[in-house]
Image: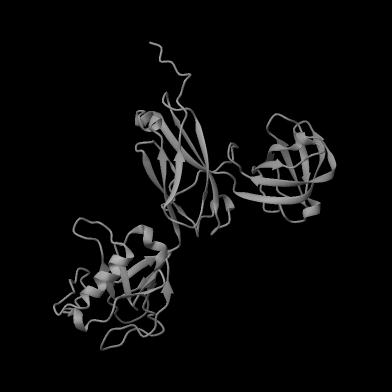
Length: 341
């Protein structure tokens, strides 16, 4: 350290990461059993209450904090329920709980800088509640013609159906020349200003010139409620001065700008089909892939294929702020493949 004097640092065993920040706790409940099975919140509360009825020492000192003997029947309470939400007492954290219960646990920390702890009981004098960012969990269930195939010749991938959907009331097309044109959204000033060069757009809603519907690629950044773009689906655009009510989907599925959904570890949901049911996760409150809005439902598409077992299959799903979601992927048998020797 800079300056004069000495300082001694030591690890604090009660430090825990919630979201992207660390918080202080001084009582830790380890609720995995000897078989490393994670406990559910009702079991946790029941077990914690049981520990507080014991006349013997309930402290195992596994974190090396040297608290010494703590008899259960004179220990401070650990948990309580408010509705279906499990709340810890001040300074209590729970290790090893079942991940499906993450949305139903509120942790109360030690506010070190504004209170600290009672010097006799070590109970926090000030505490703030914290919850983990919500993680949506579920399973993707595959039909037997996917799972019967050799794993290495199967694949599934989860894509966003789109990143942003914008409803406009009067989109116009001008300056069309071959595949190029200018998309004019003056009647919806500012609505598409977030677009960037090389973004892909799927536009629907044109009625006067229906050929303007389809896939576009932005060739420049927005300028005064206009953006230069190329039509990239093989149908050239036509000038349209009247303007139509259109929906603009940004970086949609089946465009080069499509984005694979990341799981809670920021890893693409993209793998071999090696089981009939494969779990997935999604950082509901913090996922901003491609500029999407965090803490909002995600419209996704699961694509699955098997070399000669099942045809290319796509399934739509909406990831919501829940756990226990199920996506069922039933493939049609592949009838065209022939293994010629």
